Image (cartoon, rainbow, N blue to C red; front, side):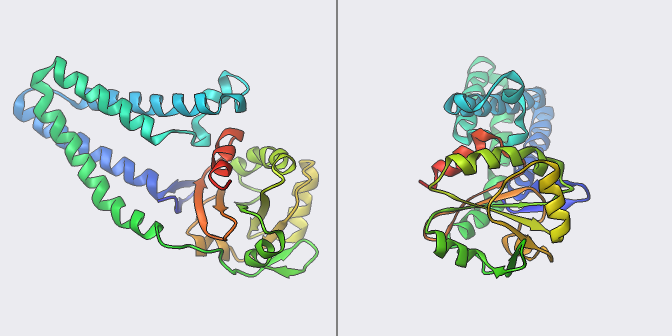
Length: 270
């Protein structure tokens, strides 16, 4: 679900695309049923979506309140900080309230929600089933900045701790914005090993980037052929992979991370 694809300069996770597809189906079905019953429900569906997103964001922010330092960071949803269950509950509550207050909308609204849910289930179900299978650390050949050859399983065996693997590039603006967050967390979370795998650049480019932004990062590795991104299905950047102490993939976060979303991923490893 968190595998990503790149469309030109834009990147999207498979999960995001499936949600958009399911909601589009819900809108189409809602419009058709609404026309048949002579009652519009498209505006209701759009309001439901906005309320669900707001609820999911609000609960996530409340749970990680100490990690946000102001209104700007709270409303900056680029970090992907949402609580799916909270969003689902808010959306369901709003739908039930509308059906109670406006009986004429019951059939078209229920039909639209059923169609959207069915679409998501059919598309996402097989992918979620696949994700339940073990996904160990890939043994993709990597190189350190001094030219030594290594790979993630070797590093994991040496450290004996969960791994947070960040795939990045110096030309990627979200990667640049999240690097200070990783730098600080690397100092604080001593029970986690952080690995920064550059995609497609050489030693000189990476060292110049680190010096330019005054970053002191451990475990900076090179993946000159973007092999790790292909193996893990992470075709857009930044992508962060969370592996537990047994080397199994626990979670994947596509897109820019904030301190809150990084902590959320780390909590699942402890």
